Length: 265
Image 1: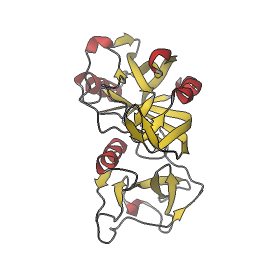
Image 2: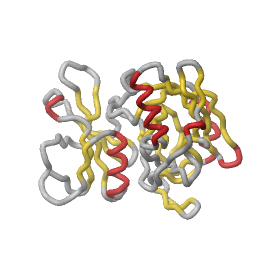
Image 3: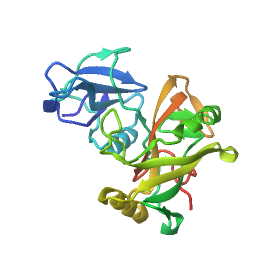
Image 4: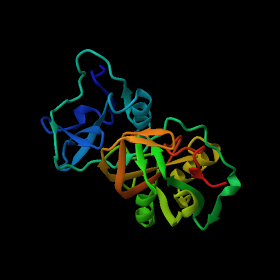
């Protein structure tokens, strides 16, 4: 059942976890319910919660879709069968990076000849992110300019991993030849997709066909809670000290094709 006051995104079934291992932690404006899977000692994200005061239904739904979860919009009434432990400020746990979903992205498509083959890899030129407001968070030129280099050799994934870490099951390639583009404060580079196996070839087909032709960055950041407006778009937080985790191919991304992100034609 829906939760009052917050949208919910179930990532895994509660029954997969050890009883009594759940806790709620804050990750930026969103909350995570984490616990220990049966037979494991590390924590894994079971669900995400999006307070209505900070996230519209469209934003929360988009974030959940990119994380591969099952979405429920906030509503009145009692909670359902998901665990709902109290919030722990500063709790130590392995938590997922900030997923940067989009809800304003038009269908992103490009021509297959934008890709070149290099051995067992398909090399896809991409604009990964740039200065601007994305999913309520503001990325500033100064932050991108001092952190872009750490995007080199980050994993390329097929969608955002549902759990707290990127595993080999999710990796489809690597980011190469990253640089900072001064004219529009963008991080650009190449996604080298390994096409020597079926999973990589399937992803390449989806990229070419347009069903996964947008990109989205996964990253950690320090939240600056100041609010304001940037180039006509309101923001609820400034994202500082960006640390890049991975680059995902997705159906839509927060930095839209219209804003200049995605595959370079």
